[in-house]
Length: 206
Image (tube, rainbow, N blue to C red; front, side):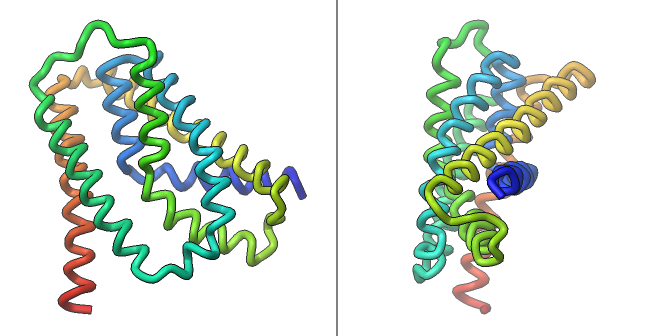
């Protein structure tokens, strides 16, 4: 049962990071602009924070699911987050990548985004409640630690594949930094627009 708990955590979070979002798009940018070493530092730091993040959210999954207007709050937080990342990326699109970065810059960035990761809250609210309700995993502290370790490893593996794919795309097509940063900035703006449209639909139509 413990192995199954670990495996479910790994698979669930691996799948959770497949859709493009603020984390994997930021990772693609780091991989292309700074190199694989910095990408690995980012992934490792982020995955360590993901362990604690998953453990806390899984403990409070049922309580969070009962909170009114939480989805609305998360949507507007995502608008601010995606908008900020989009503006930051757009402003720096023409800047040539630095030749040297601080050894700990990507680690700090990974830790920061590990905590600023509101998209994972609804994901674990749904997934966590589902797997516990269906008794796929145990809900004791030890079991949730194992589940969270699996979750951290799942995010690490998925993000590592994203980084390798970004490295492959860069070497295959020799895309300029400007094109890459502009594309990522527009994706951030598109995600922000999606959350705005979602809330406008709920307020004025639904």
